[in-house]
Structures are given as structure tokens and as C-alpha cells.
Length: 136
Image 1 (cartoon, one colour):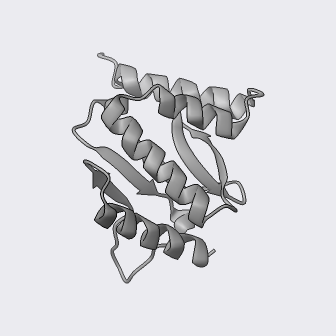
Image 2 (cartoon, rainbow, N blue to C red):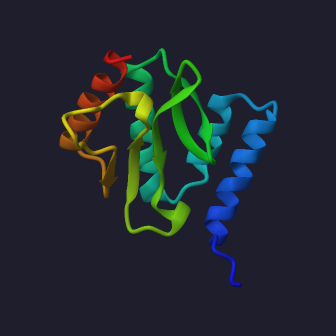
Image 3 (cartoon, rainbow, N blue to C red):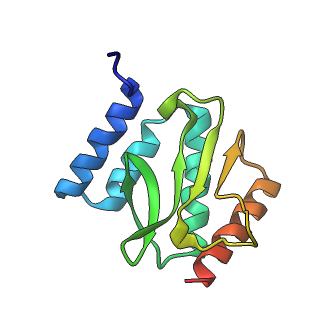
């Protein structure tokens, strides 16, 4: 039977296993290293996400999650950024876990494609992050 996991998915699982084993790397340092290793277009978005989230939600802990930059509250992922190159996607993704409590009726978005950073993207991301942390 052929392997069901892509090389990128296996790498993400290895990253997560290392994170769980508790490698003694500061979370912020690990995130900044991941951002620095990204392709320039992804890096620009990742840096903007990082700056925005750490500015408006300084109470969130910064560390990696499956090798992606992520922001935690009380040990739970609230928001994460997946660069396009990570899984060979055509766009980067800003995702929110259930701890963000973005609930809105019977259906609501929990991830957003980002092709580039702009003032309107920044405004939207800011509003969603603020909503996520205010419900916690």
C-alpha cells in the first residue's frame, strides 16, 4: 500500500513530536527561526501576522505547532499561520482553533487564505484576533 502521508505532512508530524518531547528551545526563538526560513513572499506575511498578533494580543504565548508559528492561550492554540510552501499550497493560511471560539450560528470560517498583506487584510485579521481573545 502506498504511503498516505506526503513528505510535507510527515515533516510536520516530526516537528510536532519534537515540540511535544519538549526540546529546550524558546518558543519565540523557534517561531522567528521558522519565519526567517520562509520564502520571501510567505515571510512578509508571516512577519506581519507575528507583529500584529503580538501587538494586539501580548498575552498569547508564541511557539511552534506542527512546525508552524502559533499563538497559545492557557496552553491551547488560538491562531496559527501556515506558509504556502509548507504544504506546497498556492496561498498561505491563517487558521483558528476551536479555543478561539469564533462561533457564529451553525457555521463559521476558521481559516483564511492570504495571498498578500495589505491594510484591509491587516484590519480583518486584527478584528478576528481581537474577537478570538475577547471570548476567552
